[in-house]
Image 1 (cartoon, rainbow, N blue to C red):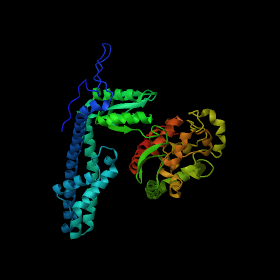
Image 2 (tube, one colour):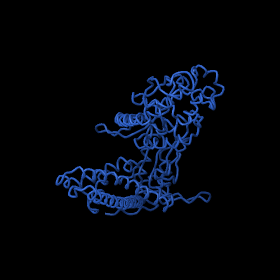
Image 3 (cartoon, rainbow, N blue to C red):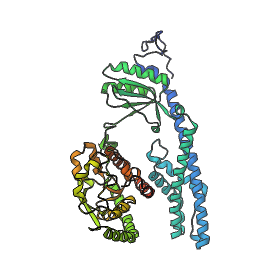
Image 4 (cartoon, rainbow, N blue to C red):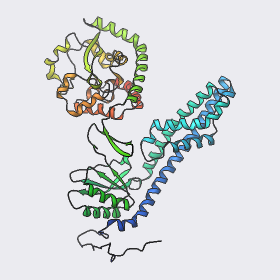
Length: 497
């Protein structure tokens, strides 16, 4: 049964003719949802079209990735079978078989949802591993062998890499081929007066219109929102900040009646040291607001990597460390190692080790040289051509060799290979509240500040920003990326003194 169309004489609709001085306007509704139902079908169709195109583009790239991975691993298995023998034990899947398993695994893992998380390396690795297990399980038990396990592991790794690559290519191709007004979802932004919302294009949305809210009547804003949705053909409504409950309920009703998705920034959005997330507790969907520090599973994984790499680093650099120690003793009197009290995770004190690069008693001269501090901030004490540095010490600093003994701090658990720069406890007196976020992770031998700034960064706030950005973005992949970038940063010797 279809409902009759409403005309201007219907009691639920009142028409306002546009004045000569105003832009053309469609009917303004006493009940905006009545006329908005006419746009709901069109909005829903556009939602579905966008989603279908997105999924089809990902599917095509994933099929190419799975087929390429199967071909690469099949070639590796055939080579291994001939080179190492035992041809009966080497397993590899057919292309069609693995493509089907990989797509099914990606689908079950939610990797076609419109979100950043399903496209992360970890989620792609989990989907790849599941796809391998699906096609591998029966074959392994038919003829179990170490070679078959190795080929299966290789297939999971290669598939993860190819999926990551093809999805990046698909995203770049879509961004190049489609202009923003076609690629990005048009959205109406609701925000209270004084709030200037910024919508990043990486979110997939573009601002098609804005309704500024204050203490006016909710119905007036509902009507303005209804006009905006119809005029701009918006598909989403984004609420920034907090608004009156009654006004929010009315705007929500209008948005949903028009077929628009409604997105709200959670409490704490834009506030430093806050990371909101949705959690489920019994029958309730709650928003948890927490500080973005490393959690227990992350800290365990990070600690395991630190111990392994620190042991390897100490063994590899032992001959070099011995040469450095001899050079320091021959260059100037005093101990080889310099010990200094710093604070780390949670504000705990520890003794940090470095090769001595200054003359003995240099710490006591710090106050007298404060006027030479290039930053002007005692929390970031940097003196170019510091007169306290010895000849060998200058060379060690240029090549960051003075920090090799900090591998001992890593083994002792005081520091990490990657993290914020170590802290001085006496600086806490000048810290502002957001500066203490740096205590949310162990200090590191290297980090974002050391790789991208070193001593060339003379703004303490910029150092804090880099340190907290590392905590916010932490992953094992980020640690590996920083470690790999540390070598060229040391070789450039930019800002090292």
